[in-house]
Image (tube, rainbow, N blue to C red; front, side, top):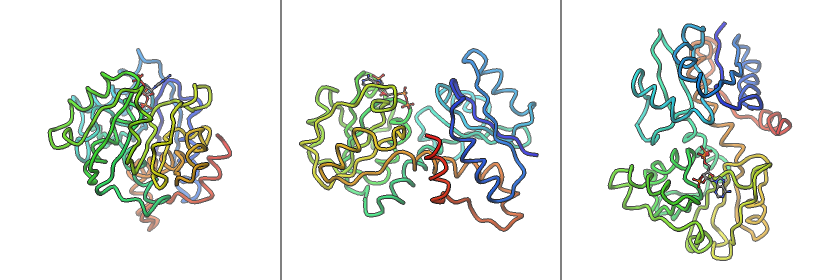
Length: 288
Ligand code: ATR
């Protein structure tokens, strides 16, 4: 039986086993998705031993996405374009060789495509709040999809300056940095506002932002999904802005991993791809 796991610290409350478990059952595939909470000092060894432990792949979550990227860069292969700016979340192991990819990007864009199909990245002005791993993973693809301008603003300014510096010229030219104190001013003319900070999450302080300058038709999305409707999304909804919650990103980022790990099993059953059904969404929502 194929074994997959999620590695993080903490990882106990991860919802990934619910998502992958749903697909294993729905498609009648024999497989196991385990939680392997791993202390940071043990990550390196654990990661290198995954193959010996019988895993065909894994998801990587906080705080190991950057470390996994480095390890794959040195000892494995990155799949797709190298736009991840140093962080990956999905590993496939085939004949002992490690392949790494970030599916957060797919999750982010698919969530918007499915839940706000009228939104166009082409010629858009985008404001991204935050400069952590999530901001890193989506920025270059937002530019690649044709955004006219991307404004980055983060409490620690040097973190977003670093992101801008790491981008190649064609991307970097489109990126503007605003002081965190000016985040409300940055919203003038925006078509899309994305919160990638942890603010607004259960147990974290709220995100304080004045949406007055945000055009009423701008799409607002949050990668925080607990609570499902964050104070930012509520504030946006109350003034009539379209919103997309963050749960879809979690659900869709899981799709490419499952399809890689269980490709043979799906093929044998004539299943082209796995679906994020309303039933799956409801199931995960019930566990939030
Ligand atoms: P992720 O990988 O999910 O993006 P992360 O790398 O820890 O997580 O990033 C968290 C983001 O939330 C960062 O942009 C962080 O800002 P800093 O770079 O200044 O740390 C932001 N964040 C966390 N707590 C915050 C707070 N109290 N005020 C403002 N921003 C905060």
